[in-house]
Length: 292
Ligand code: MN
Image (cartoon, rainbow, N blue to C red; front, side):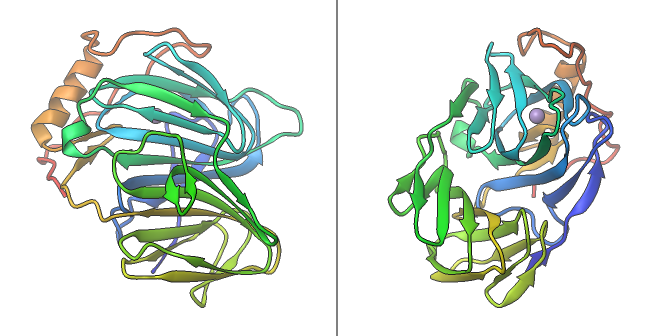
């Protein structure tokens, strides 16, 4: 199946919109990957990314850049600038807040993806923590480079903490390649810098081709050097309630998180950043959120 991106105007990011691939009306998730935004390429300015302090629960945020840089600050007192080919991974667990800020960089472009993974039930309330990885396992072959930022692919094992069997990788490809797949995984392939033909289907830049389990290999062809995001994972079968920046299991849990964040009960410690301010949660909908 080919999923087309939909432009989402983020109230928290001035002047930019992102392309959302997951969740999608036709597909909720790929393995434990529950959220995928693709942003850029566009000129990097002070307005490219200005996301003030906001909370997360029950998930991991994954930031992966192709170009540009972003400064991350969080309520566990981490401050980390991320650059291309590096991973910022924030395990939200029981609750963490962070902000993400771009700085003006002359002639620089911002281009990347923001992902979430769902934490399994027995891990979703763990103490939050943050990881930055600048050295990721990379295979450099004659006509391709494969870097694994989360999970593993054959001998390439990311040092980052994963909680379910999954894969997050960037493939840079010239010409044609057949990659072995894990038949227990679902997969997604997102060409980031050009089109690609994947399993005989033309996938335009910014579209996501998805594969169900039971595939043993994938054939990818490109006309020119192209970067492709690869996501995979064992089907994540727990039912989730995803609302705003929270992942939980029931409407009541979400309502409590919304209330506590907006009433600032110090559930999540404060921290200072260059941006200042914070983003309140929107009003809860009148309908009861259902786990799906
Ligand atoms: Mn966030």
